[in-house]
View 1 (spheres, rainbow, N blue to C red):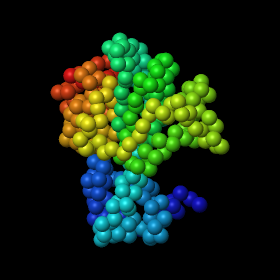
View 2 (spheres, rainbow, N blue to C red):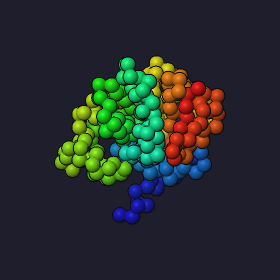
View 3 (cartoon, rainbow, N blue to C red):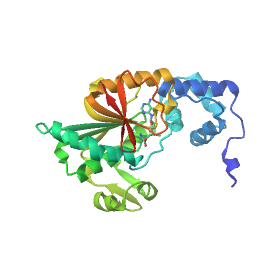
Length: 279
Ligand SMILES: C[S@@+](CC[C@H](N)C(=O)[O-])C[C@H]1O[C@@H](n2cnc3c(N)ncnc32)[C@H](O)[C@@H]1O
């Protein structure tokens, strides 16, 4: 079957296209500007098929006519981009290992507790990479707390399971860590309990107030702010600042613009990584 057969024969009507853009923006904050017809068609086609509908226009008619929070949420979750992999942007992990950890270990010699947050954690590779790095640095699991959060409940469920396909463990995970921390589970790989026990996942919308979650020593907020408008981004920077200890680190994605961040964070370069230090 040619790939074109998989797409609906009926084009999305202009008013439905706008309705979907607004729905996504209202529900999750993501701005889908320009021509995203292909994206809507490819991501929503499975929902249209599963519901036995003829087209995305029928799906919009259902969403418009009745309050359907569950279908509305499925549409939003289908439109989020969940791309992630282990040890993404290795220079940042090097900076944590070589600079942040030694200083935290000096400062927290008494209490020992270290707290980290992977905001927009997707399927968990970011949080688990950090967990393995900390265990490899011989930090006692008793002293580590890592929180992973994402908007999508399906994604959070997958992250909590700690189960990965071969193709996922092939991306960024050193073979030595695969052997040490994963067990084969049929065609998949199961992350061991020693790593899973120090990471907890929750569904959280980054646009909500987040201060009660902290204080953290480090927050990853990578490859998600690119989807938000400038005003939302600035509000999130302020909230993230409120969740960090003074001097705590914020790590953003490589493609992320940080304009508006200066009021709360100081930009520094550590090795080949850019980090933002809470003022
Ligand atoms: C591209 S992934 C980034 C994963 C990981 N941080 C990384 O850099 O590899 C973006 C994630 O942001 C989540 N997301 C999008 N909007 C969100 C929101 N308003 N609140 C929380 N998470 C959100 C998506 O569900 C998705 O899993």
